[in-house]
Length: 254
Image (tube, rainbow, N blue to C red; front, top):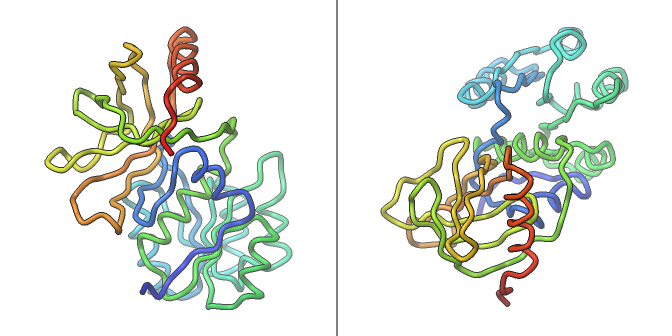
């Protein structure tokens, strides 16, 4: 059993699990330029470790004390804040994160405490319980960033294992939606896909440009298969229309 967990605000996981799927080991979403993440953790070691974890795909901005955290959120135009519960639940800090036209997503780090977890949920924040696990933190960051993006939501259609290719690599479509797709990369192929790739489904004879959102190796699978979730991006209108028609007509898997 794992000694860590994350608590998501109501509706947040539904966006990902109902449309693209979500699993325990995942990458952060690709957002073009590296997202700025304020790391507001008083503990020096914890702040440095979290910043190192984030640095591969983010621009971490350490801010160990409340005044510096407030300053960074106000002046650096942060995409997201990872904060210790003592800072995250400060009224001034919360109002700063929630102020303006686009609230700043928040991931709270704290001890196992049902009251604190419920408070985070009420405030629309994700809550990561200590001891902090790298994969769980990155998953929470990824979910918070995706949840903050304006995405039209539509039902996810499970299609079983439909043959397709991703940048020429044989893959299996697991489920599809108007906005995205979840696919499986078979054992023996490379374990991940580039930030942007092309999915081709022979059944409909159309290629769709996809932006990688997350990558996961499901723990319940004994083989080395990898799952990948992606969102349609930059496709001409006629291709999107053809894709949506495919989503509407594709045989469902039960």
